Image (cartoon, helix red, strand yellow):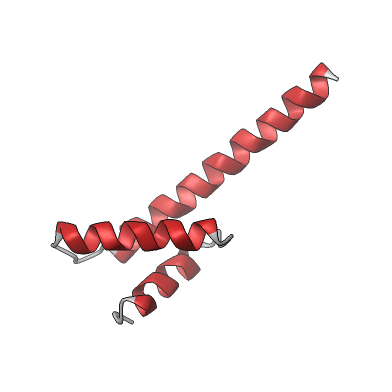
Length: 72
């Protein structure tokens, strides 16, 4: 049982790391050329919302966020 819990924990950590990397990549690419901290904060919230909805592809997240802001 302990081994199963350790494997499950390792999988969760791996998934968290992948999700975090995708979120960071989407945010960074969506913020290219953006100077306003206020706009960056809005982008951050929208990227998190898209990730919470289940999207993991940073390019798709970026596209959805920019579209929602009328920037694409």
